[in-house]
Each structure stands twice: as C-alpha cells, then as structure tokens.
Image (cartoon, rainbow over all chains, first blue to last red; front, top):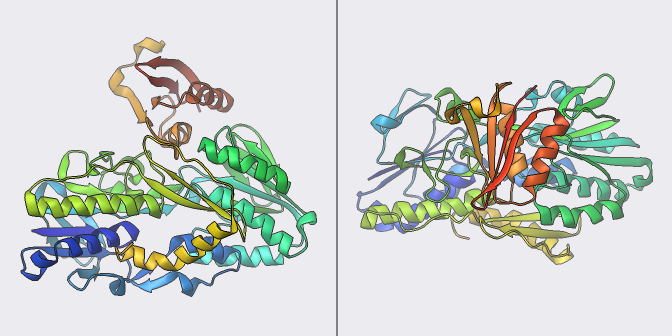
Length: 377
Length: 83
C-alpha cells in the first residue's frame, strides 16, 4: 500500500509519524510505503512568531530540520506537488516526477494574502511570517507613543491571535514604562470581541481592565498608508500611528489552480476528513473548508484520526474513527498569564481565569511541540 | 429578482452548524468575500445568537437580508451580496 502525504507541516508530519509507528511491521516488510512531499526542508513552529514580534524569541528558535522530525521509515523529499490527478491516483511534482498512491493525504496548509486589502501590506505590521514578525518588533521597539490599531482580516489562521496580540501589546508597553502614552484600539469583524462567545465574555473585562478600546463589526476594507487611516466595510475609520494586522488567508495556490476548492480550501467531510467524492483522499489542517479553527491544534487532532484510520484501512480494510471537531488552544493573556479554550463540534469552551501556571505550561509546550509533531504526544 | 425567484442550486450554502470557532458569522463573512455581487448565500447555524448577529452585520455592511428562520432546530439565514 502506498501512502502519499503532501505537505510537511504539523498535520502532514503527525500523520506520517503516527502511521509509521502504527504500521511499523508492514513498513519493515515492505508492504507499506509512506512518502511525504514538502515545499521546504525546514519545519517552523508557527505560534512562535508572536513571541518573535515582541522580542521574546529569535527566528532561529522556531525551526528544526524536517527530516529530523520524521520516523526513519518515511521517504521524505522536498519536491512540492504541482498537479493532482485524483482520478488516476497520481500527483506530479515540481521536478517533473510522478507519484502514485493508494491513499493520499493533503496537508498543504494556508498562506497569508494581505494584498487582498488595499494598502494593508504598506500600512500595517504583521507577524505571520519570520520577516514581518522581526520587522514588527523593530517598529514596536522604536515606538514612543500614540495610537495603535489592531485589525483582523477574514478568514485568518489562529483565531486566538487577535486577542493575544492585544494582551501582549499592553504588557510590552507597560514593561517599557510607556503604556500611559499608548492608546490601543482593537477592531474585530463580528459583533463581540471574539467569535467564541465564552472567549468574548472573558476577554472583554480584561480589555476594560487594561484600558483597551474596541470596535466590533469592523471588517477592514482598505488602509491609507500615507494618511495612516484604516477604513472598514461597515463605513467607519480609525487614524493610527501604528497599525497591526491579522492578515486574511487563502488556501495554497496549487489547490486553487487545480480547482480542488474555492479559495484554496478543499471540501471535506467534517467527520471522516475525506475529500468530497474521494474516499481515499484525506484532508486536514488549514487545507480543509471545515468550519473549524485553522490552528496547529486542529491539525494535530485531525491527524491522529486520519492516522488511525489509514492504519485500520491497511489492517482491516475499514476506517474506525470519526473526528469530533476537537480543538485545544492556549490563550496567552499577556507575558506572564495564560488560559486555554478546548471545544469540539458539540461542546463550547469553558474558559478558566488566566493564570501564571498555564502561561508556564504554554512556555513548556513551545518546546514540547517538537515531540508533538513527531507524533509522540 | 423576488426572494422566491432564485434557484436553490444558485444559493451558496455556508454550513456552520455545530461550530464554535470560527463561528457562523465569521464563516459567512469569509464566504461573502469570495462571492460576487448579486450572489445569494445561506448560512446554517445551530447557534441561537446567529438569528440576531448575522442580520445585524448584513444590514450594517449594506447587504440584503432575504430570510431568517429556524427550521428543525437550525437557523437558516439567507442574504444577497449587494456591494
């Protein structure tokens, strides 16, 4: 049986490692082959970018060699897929190679598209790439006071990031002794300060306590970088001295180009995690069109379900588990406190007060991630 | 075009049932951004809050609310992208 995984991020790596362990005997006997094709030989811990933006981590701390994260029996190659021939069970890569498969896993992820909002690239600081996070830190460190705006594009990866960046801004300026010289205003697309009702109920009094202003139903329409004004689809505007944006996202270009899903998001069964119309094609992480958070956590829990099902298909000819929508997100409430949101399709999160111990757990998880992506946690 | 004139196959369904994050309104906003002016979208939600917060956004941004009803425990809210 040939198992082909396209994408070497959190989801693809966990699927590969988990399946390799479950099918160790079959791999050793040559009855199963696992191949991962990726666009990069490096693996980035993306949540660390928030720390880079506030000078708490440096970019080199975010990376590991991708090969070093994978079980020895997995064949890994840096050769991104450029063509999916799903009806022939084949893919074609950038190098011109063709790979056939019995089971395909698509975990290509998402990309930021700040260019979808006129002026956003020129006028706002971002922290969703290494380069932009470093630039944001430099801007923050030079900032001596004024109006700071936070705006949020839709859809976006890591739905907790908008509130986390606000808490971090508050603590950062406080630590520099200039919080009283900085006005922070948070702008959010829906009618409360976070899309999850219980997160909104928790965050709003925190914002009030920190003196953070907020405007809801604010969908960023355009940024005038020269005049330093950001305008909303809803007809309001905000004059800023420093603008920080959560950029809108799309699925990867190859998904769109191949017509596999509008916006680059592949239509996926929310329980089976198979691509609509293809029982032997699994999709996970940011790549799906599911109404589930685009986070490493969702990719992780989806990967465990997919790996178990691939292994059971190999062993008994049928999948055994459904994905229940589980997501677990840490929420950094500044530089020394944190809480978390855990939920699934049926049960909303019930937030606990932020604590120092949960912050230190998150700090530990930043290192434990490398065990997690190896499929050990 | 009257509300009942559009063919159901032309309606883009945003199935946000049983979801807490990103949630029905955020899902709808994302799909509206992908849609063309004139497109009709229908969001399905099991969150009772959607009955008020989806129409509030649709009206505030200047789109057209076509219907808002609860059928078999699911809110079905239909709108047309106007701009």
